[in-house]
Length: 450
Length: 170
Image (cartoon, rainbow over the protein chains, first blue to last red):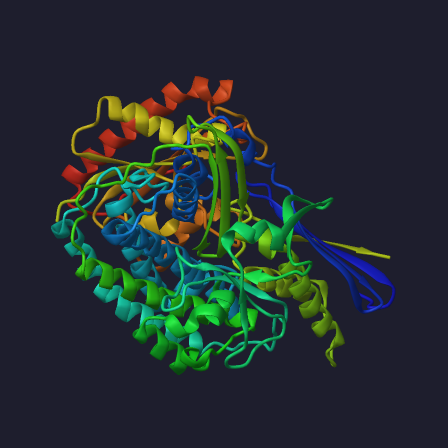
């Protein structure tokens, strides 16, 4: 294989039932000219077919967008519509919602850490190979994940696409005795989660950094998941006390602009005209100081710096460590909520419709998720707008791919072969845990030389 | 602890033929087989591994691709065969049932027996409803699954917990 002239690396999709994406990389004379993450799954038109539905329906309908993070869609939809209707859900109902959200975080993040991301650090092609060599770690990951599943089943009614969420709260809230078995499971999961932080901290991390802006929700005093306002850490900021600029969620669409691109059916987002990253690294940068104390200690011991003083991690390969810290935080917070739980006086607050528009954003496991709805006096939706995290990260992933491949092409020694570049690109994409459609399969390699 | 018979319908009813597994489980729920646990699954490994115990006999109902394919054709596969047939794990986001069986084997968490009762699918586009060849095959698949459940109960009663070997059939 020559590195002179041009070549195109086309990483095509494997045909599967759900989710299709590919990567198209163009290299001219050892310079990466272009990297396009091509998401060509048929658009699902959720925004269009929400119009005309009742204002109580988006939590259930939008939860179908994602099989891994349905709660994120439910929570964001509920908040946006409740805001439009002038209703605030707080107290024990808000805590129960947060508990359900933590269940999803625990489940989703531990799946990615142990079964999808960790194999990359051992040169394994799959979780099966990893399990043969590191059985204890994979078993531990499954235990943590099952603790998240248990929360989802208990509070959401079932583990996949929970059905107990409604505007204003829940159809049914649990008695304290029903949550007690969860606490037992979570105590074990907390030890497991801290062990996982220690495990992933020992991985070998290539040098890399994402130097663009970071966007996450910020709620001073809390590692924001379902509260706060969008906040931006500027491009390149990586020192303690780096300034964070915020804006009201109502101004989200003024700052975050989506545009169509020919190579993808997903919209590509820019933040004030620049690619940007949302997700674990952004949350850690913006809210790290407000992690649970046990997660703070784990982060320090894992070499992530001191989040209490605003440490920032910009290495996408280390996102696995940040995710592990987030799991420890989520488990600890879930335990705190269960220990303090007193049932609300009613399972939900009434949310009568009114002609209005409302928007909200929360932190899905893979980043900030934004919803906006408008309704008429009867509660019939006249507009729906959904900006998921992977669409926001797409441009940043492409930028990261260009930089990482260029860095490899510039390295002295043996030139990189297509197989090595393919593996590098797959790792680079997995670092960001994108949700192509929730079950995306991709990356088979074809080389065309110019 | 006594083993159970666990039937798991794997698939997504909103992707047409991919819903064949859940459709069979739904049909079984109308007249549930005695002492049999019925479950749906999206194939996600953490949840799927939690559905069985080592002493259980598991019947997985699935839709498969075949090359060359004949939509509506039925298959009975061992777990080993299903794991071998699994697509290469290239997802950023999930594992499939085949990888789940391989993972269970690597973790020594397979049930005492596991068979896959499968039908070849034709249409995996967005939407509800099975394609005609799969819809036509569904009663036959249901009979095949019902027979597999009865056989599993027989073996649980008579084999004292020893694993049973199965032949792949098509």
